[in-house]
Amino acid sequence: MDAGLDDDDIMLITPEVMMSQLVRTVGNADVPLPSAGTEADTVRRFAQYASQGHYALLVRAPENEDSERVMRALQGHPVSHAQKYRMLVIEDLA
Image (cartoon, rainbow, N blue to C red; front, side):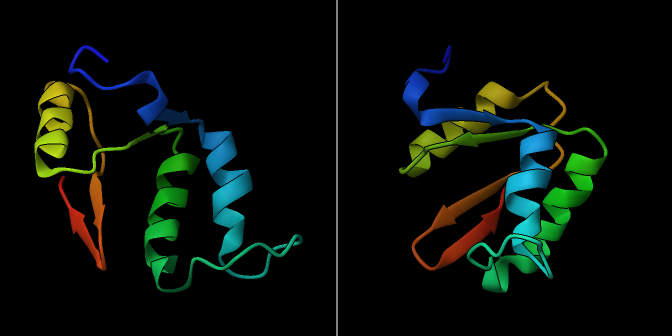
């Protein structure tokens, strides 16, 4: 928020929510949810981080300048993985 982001554009996801809501979309889940499809590898990576106690920070950053501002704000903090979702493209940032 200090970087000028709106509170509504930031979501903190706990490891528990990550494991119970997102990770079960891959493979054989007890409760069928929409499949992550080609994102299965990414979801598995998120599952690995969540199982190690990592939280996820989801930030709406539609413009390149927004993404750069978010990455600058996160400098000095332990970021395990960062991705930018664009139209038809997923770009690894860290």
